[in-house]
Image (cartoon, rainbow, N blue to C red; front, side, top):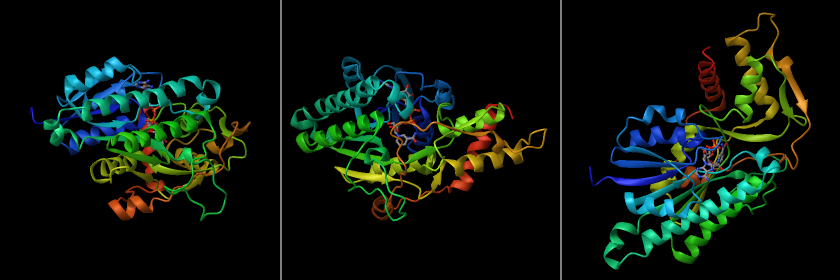
Length: 343
Ligand code: NAD
């Protein structure tokens, strides 16, 4: 209906956004969703096939840095909320080609903030009721905090100082700061979520878990950086989506929330677990374990040793809790990828 509220989502042909849109469309029957995505190498519309027929979903191919286009979308569709996923997201690419990370992650975020601010807040007073609740939700990463010691009590909180080490995390940290500045300087209603490593269906081939599965099934060496002991805190993508939903609707204005599943694993533990699942589901004819394919390769430059999130604020203030633990989530995930290979 015409009373529907229209929300602009960016970058949802990618991994997390394409899990978020079907979930959000179903949960909020009075929202219209617009997905603005440039379809870089990381975007794939097949991820959203299930939404194509939905009249409340619209895809627009375009760049978040294109100010005229973003302004057009705001006024044409009377945008009343933004959830901003679009980014260059792969650390290895940021080491080889940092420029595009500054362009999309910093300039793109700035463009969206500035257009949102001007559209929502430079309205005559009579519009205040309608627009003063409009929210800008910025999706960010725990990588902005840098790296942790091996002490299990050492965790990232919302107060941890920023200390980004890769061009990727530096560009995300910078975008977070611009969001903050639009809140503090102009009073734009913003929230930021900083999430740990996601895993689940629809992740791009270049990332760790899809790479492990692809290489194993092709009987090729499974590359693991350095000694394989780098620790990440893994969260099932739908649990991230539920956290975003909660913060978008009930988070306090001007606040930052960390999202993480308290599921720390070394890369070696991840690859071992996946190989065990594959050994069971698609045993090799020669009876060997896929683990024999694991090959250590030269470490990533500036590779952070450990990330781990303290999600107490989100748990206590907003009642969030991950539904999936790593052992159940990873089985679901492997099953989904096997289906893509018609296995
Ligand atoms: P992704 O790389 O899978 O998807 C990014 C999407 O953004 C793609 O569809 C791409 O086409 C689009 N895009 C890129 N540049 C664009 C531009 N200039 N204009 C419009 N669209 C553009 O990324 P993802 O893993 O889904 O991550 C989404 C967001 O979540 C990112 O902001 C990322 O920093 C953040 N994040 C990711 C993780 C993770 O583990 N994947 C963890 C924490 C935070």
